[in-house]
Image (tube, rainbow, N blue to C red; front, top):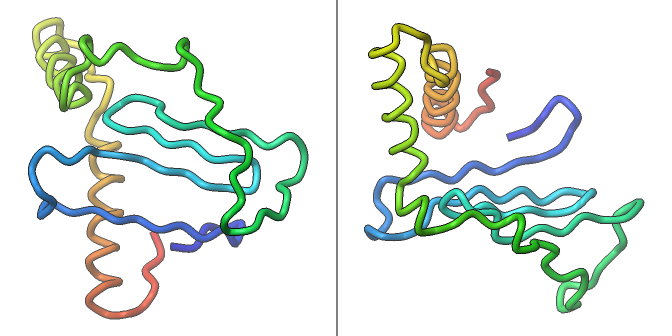
Length: 128
């Protein structure tokens, strides 16, 4: 996908992965990189100033994640984000309040997924 700024992005999603594989979000940019795996920040590197030119085989920067950045895996468990979302929904119904994640956010996610399908089928960009 192409952002308004001209930055390029890739979305890869599947429900056909072998069960037990992690869910991850990876962001790589000129100011640094971050990886979140199963709700845990597992890698972080922030550049000081402009991004340096780095050769493909260079080992630089390193992981800047500290113990304070890590979440307790025992507290989270596999799929904890969904569990917390379901618990919030049940509490919202019980207390008659709006859930933290509502239909507007769900529609946004669904529109992205449907645009991906349309783009894949047509071979053309789809504006969101």
